[in-house]
Length: 269
Length: 270
Image 1 (tube, chains in turn orange, yellow):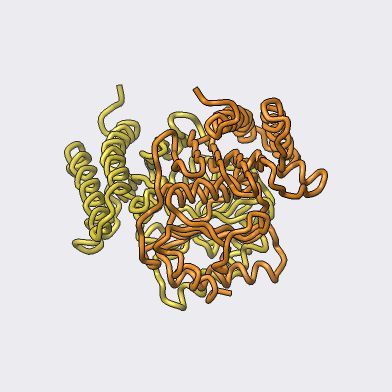
Image 2 (image 1 turned 60 degrees about the vertical axis):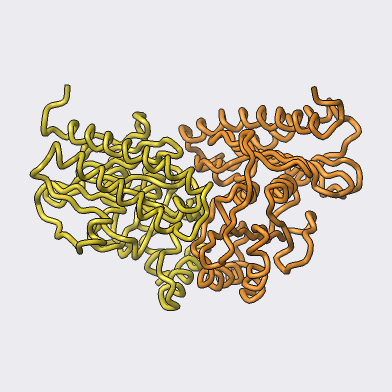
């Protein structure tokens, strides 16, 4: 039996919260497909908010002294500073555009930092029923089975993931596509799936070899970063420096590809 | 009971073949993840060929007078000309790179043309267990339930899919990324999933609004998906706006409301 406040018990509660929020997403996911109307963006916002409220209330009930950082609360009230206190960092619905379009790459992402270190991660895709979990030092799992990163050591045989992003100004889009153009000469192929957290999980379970993204919030990576690390992978700043989960920059890969990947990213600037 | 030689019977046989091939893919899919070795590309080739052999054998048994065009047979023996004869056009494993990497977007694609018109389409993703089917004039289905394209009418609210392609020469890659760059200003977001046939099915069931690809492998990538899109109320066309030629290695697809704006955006992106 999991000891109260042990990491195992924290994981159990986080999984419970993720699965319940996943149920909310799953119900709304199929309704969206049937009902096309102008308020589509509003619909998503409602589900996002509903899931975040649910997850926060659920976890606050068990852990009233913990801190909480969520995408929707931050949008409404401004950023909460990350402290050493145990802090739940939550994206209640990652893959918003996919949700609106009925594209099955959506997830709940719940991470816990202690002393600012990502320590626990839960990512749950309720449409494909895939639950990724990890506790620092204890391995990473998909639906309870151990997962590990790929053993690919050659960039040119690697599958790279990134996203087109949400900014449509010329400067950002120019930089994004120039970067993609540069990298396409060096990797096997490119995937864009629309969920940062699920991309990190893809690295963790070996479906992807390389991932980078610029421009997102800590809730998109807090859980995925633990899962990648516990699957034997590495997460870092695209410049090669250490990852700072409060900056909107991340790269991930297996250890064998890291150096070549950083070099390719730097050359793509 | 379906009448011998009827469209419904052709479809039933194609589904059977797709599901059997899907089982081979599913077994190989999880093995690929566990066994990393230099012959990874060989492993895929083995599965591709095994699936194509199985599908052809099954269909030839029932329809010995039909013609067959398959990706692997074409690679081995050269292209077969498309004639008016009933012709099965098969990609035994679309999403080869995904198969190798364990990325769950792979499928069997089986199309039947009659007088060169795509008439029956079956696309089966054995990892996500999604079976897309259509008969000309009889609607499109996902796991037996009717599907239809999205009703999105604005390009800026549309989800676009395309692929990076398999050519890595500067001229092709530059053109590809310039095209993507131009389109990114005009659409909501971009998806790259690695399977042409599944992208077409994505348009058909409304998960995607727009799709284009230039320079894919051959007619086997689109013969089935084209029927499925049409029967779901969508349109398939050449990216220039002209009629689709399934042997041309060029395709675009969308719901009817978006077609004109999409063609314009594609032309401007050249």
